[in-house]
Image 1 (tube, rainbow, N blue to C red):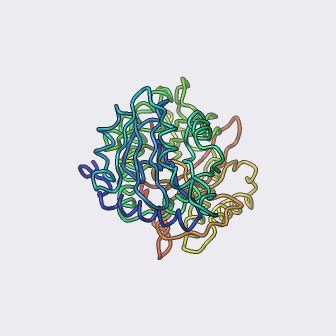
Image 2: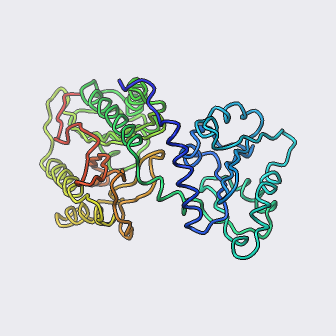
Image 3: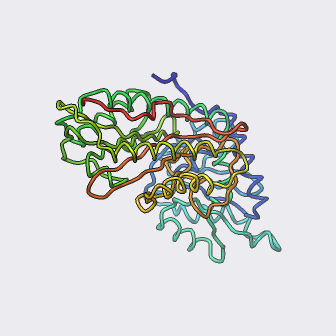
Length: 390
């Protein structure tokens, strides 16, 4: 099990807000408006679901930071680390109030700033609902909006020591889960049954939420994002297990492909072994390439070139990885065209795969963190081919 009550210390939220405000000025923004989602959790510790009632953290370049929430959320907002530390003030509105107009009032000093400063963009969090964006546009005529990710991307994609600790805990819990599933009964059970067991085990291992549990057996393994269904797992076929969830806000994500031998002890076919070894070698090559200063696209190229040289390039149908943290998919992305240079503290998946339609697929995934010395692999479960009775 994971350590009790893991989390981010309160003073870290104050440091994050200070860094955010420095970035607002450096990027030439007038303010950020952050709605419910990972950006808001990163800055305040607030956990909630987007809804029709507007919730926004108003972060001007200068002046007080206000957390505007519906009154029924005020107590919850007051308890967030950023507010309890005195770094933000909660402003609650009632059901009949115009929340967007309230936001406009708070931004009035920014809008009335003379010269270029008064024409600087306002950043909106990327996940803000369209209904709220349109309401803000009506309440703030003449204002220019841009994605807040232009400010927050650089802050969030480099993890600090506390975030790295939580990612390690989440990865270890996911490893224990996938190992338990591989060691358990599989033959005759449906993909959906195994998926439900995975979700339960993730929670038992300390996750707050089980976000996904892909189980692709036999030909279904050739669909990278297969929805676990009613197909029963049989002997003499592979199963792709891709699972992950949230532990204290931070995500796990790991994939292993196992061979289920069944009662007849059916051994893997030669091409499956060849493809499995190829994917494992591509995964190792991409991981070994991780070091500070390397462009993110280089990690993809390492795995892709390895697979293409063996004649399976057309069957590797997705990027090799994505950033991971408060979101399962976030910056930086390991994909062709992304010249972002890796920095110590960046965490991302390395997950090459080969998918042969109508037959089977193989994917192997670890979460990797860039360090000063190269790479730290957070997932420790074996990458050797497991041939299990099932």
